[in-house]
Structure formats: C-alpha cells, structure tokens
Image 1 (cartoon, helix red, strand yellow):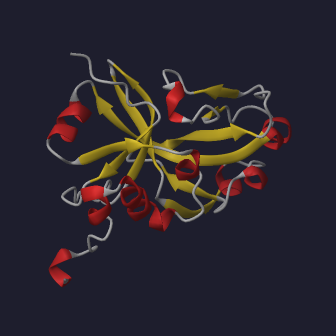
Image 2 (cartoon, rainbow, N blue to C red; image 1 turned 90 degrees about the vertical axis):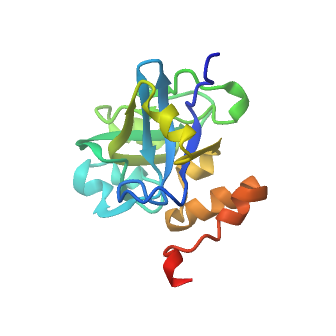
Length: 193
C-alpha cells in the first residue's frame, strides 16, 4: 500500500526524540517523494537578521525578521518560503509540488532569492528564510514515524510564519486534541517534574 505524501504536513517531534537537532522541533515538509523527504524546522529562530545573510530581503521578512535554522543539512544554503499577497502569484514564487489541495496551504510556496527583492518581496504577504534543511533518504522517515519519533499532523500557514516560534511545539500538539493535546504540557526536563 502506498504511503500518503507528506508535503505540506507537519512533523512534530515526540518527547522521546532527544537528539539536539530535532528536540521539540516542528518540521514543515516542503517536498516528499519516493527518493526522500525534505523539510524545514519552523521553531528554531537564529540571532542573525535576514538582511545580514540575504541582503535587501530583510524588509520583507515576517516577524521575527531573523533567519531560522531549517535543519542540520546544508546549513550553508537557504530555503525561502512565502505566500503571495495578491491572487496573482509573482514571478520567482513557486507553489509546493504534490500539495494536497484539501490542506488549505495553497498559498505557501518556495521563493527564489535570486529574484529582485523589490519586485518579488513586495508581492509577498508572508516570507521566511531558513538556513539549511532537514532531510531523510527514501524510507528513513517512515521508519522514524513507525518508531514513534514523529507525529504527522496537518499544517496551517500560520505555523510556517509563526510570530511565536518558541511556543509552536506546544500549540500544534494542543490543537490536535486527545492524547497529543496532553503531550503539549510535557515538561522540558521530565526529571525535574
């Protein structure tokens, strides 16, 4: 049986996932194919402003207007996500491929940072830049999900462009209801409980 595509979904780290790179992380899946999965961590803001890394794009960055650590892979490169501010998508913006239209994330896409910021940036209603990404080889992520390391949940555009990344892990779990909502209160360090 084919696994459903994960593009546009969130991977929320289970409390048992204690690896520093992914502890309490919320990953937005940008691309999921038979060859592997690529995503960006949404709740790891850095102390570096967008303008310090990608000149002239800082004025268009959503708050907080800083770079985000997208993951431990390819940290010398960036991935930018954005939502057009109008019904006409601007040149340099591409929708996510394979996105289930029922997810309500139609406006989230990849932004070409080589395009002119004054034209493209001004046409975006939301914009975020990630240094690096999270990546899994074919079958690797499915194994981690089966082991209970990740919860796969629906995403909303507000997750991708959150103004409060430090609360995203708890907020996403809480809105799922049931057992996942209970996990949203799981202490940072259970030994201190």
